[in-house]
Length: 330
Image 1 (cartoon, helix red, strand yellow):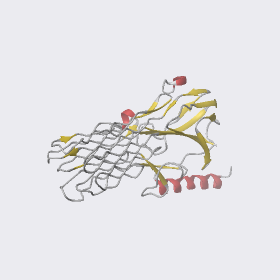
Image 2: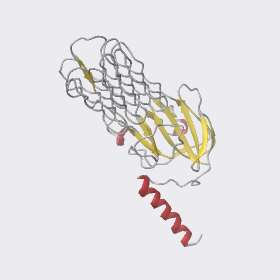
Image 3: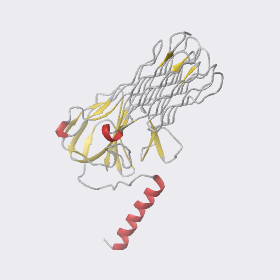
Image 4: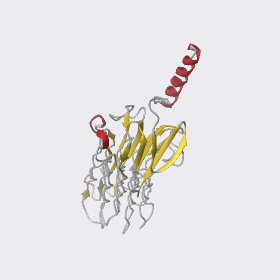
């Protein structure tokens, strides 16, 4: 190839990197992968496999090579009665530019069956929401490849009535928000804040530092918003999710960067009396805006957390189910 052509290719890659903030992948590098399983699509020079809940499908490789993956757990549900938002599912990936320990690394597959488990979102209850379940690619470590998991998001704090006291959010891939009804702080659940050890990313839920409401659940890209003064439209926003490049528009949600698709946004917390707050980009549910209305559900296929429920006998929203995405050069 002429040197000028090589230079043009490298320049294009540099342009891609400077405008997207991620390193370009080179389609066609390494062995050609052939595989089946999930819902498939071809776009941007790649073949994609999308696995959503519920699924009993597996990733079946007939010709090996290197793949890229995204593994996202189910989101936590929002809490009831002035409830907090649920935390988003943890996100693990080797996509170029991903901040976890697998980011930009090679993952080789050889012919064989790679099991897929996609985590469901958490269910609402009479009080705090339940946590989401974990998604796993290659659970038993087929052909010596590492299992890759994304933890379920923590449930948002809540109560079943207008009782005194505070409730803490649950830990998870991202933590659920805390809830308070008497001005003693309800603490947000912890998220996965050590991506270089576990591979996955997540953030804590917000704290409810004042009465009558819940804080936001954490998202893959940021912590949940704290609940502040009673009677105000305090933050309580769900934490923002994480945006991936190159995802077909049928998956994920829009976000602040129009070139990316977002996943794993946290659910929003309720603010007294009926001030709905927004869930995080990436499928987080909004909190309730009335009495008694439920919080918004996290979006299935994103791992988004559910929104907090409002006044009286209102429950939080369910967590969104997770997703597993695999791609390789077409």
